[in-house]
Image (cartoon, rainbow over the protein chains, first blue to last red):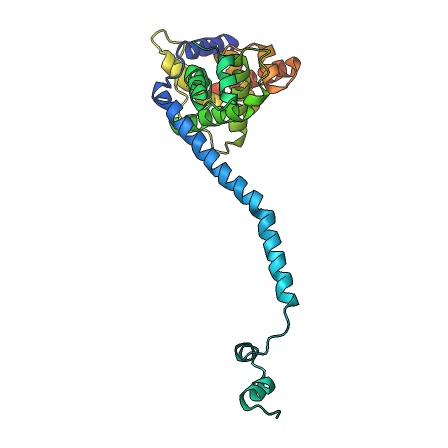
Length: 96
Length: 175
């Protein structure tokens, strides 16, 4: 194929621009709906991101509080630990 | 009737309807250019949405020293180039028969468009972009240079190589 043929091919193609009327129909409505959805999602993500330090602080405080708690000798916690000696002592009142 | 610049200002002030009006005014040109690079209406819709969403995000950077239309055209070209680079799809396996018959007097522009579209789809993204903008969209070398960030000499070299590649594609089919 030579330059002339290619130029004529381009000229023919230029004469008939693509018909996009069907795709364009109602485009603004879909665009604005997509935009609103994106902003809503962005809003939720921003809120979660802003709350992250508070979540982290809460976890840290709870962790510290748990560590600083005095040992618990109640029956429930003893059963949980499955400590035989302590359990016997708790049930009988005597040291084995 | 508000100007484009007034609509941009209203959009930046939070008026969503102003942005809708901007989209309504300019969607024809965006769709027209995007359609040169898309094989189906689904991709076309996606690409047009991408362009306008990028416009929405970048409106703050519109300084108004050039018409909004030019700014939008540059942004559209960049989006189209990104689309071409991201598309890992194989080029459509459509027949190139129209390449032989396009020179016949009874041939139609529709055939020529299909032929060119199919042949262009086999080029590298940069080659396809340059040839489409130069030959089908009638952009100047300077405008392409501004939109892509390539130097004018670079655009000319790319266009020359793209033409050679396109001729080879059409000729190889002819044989």
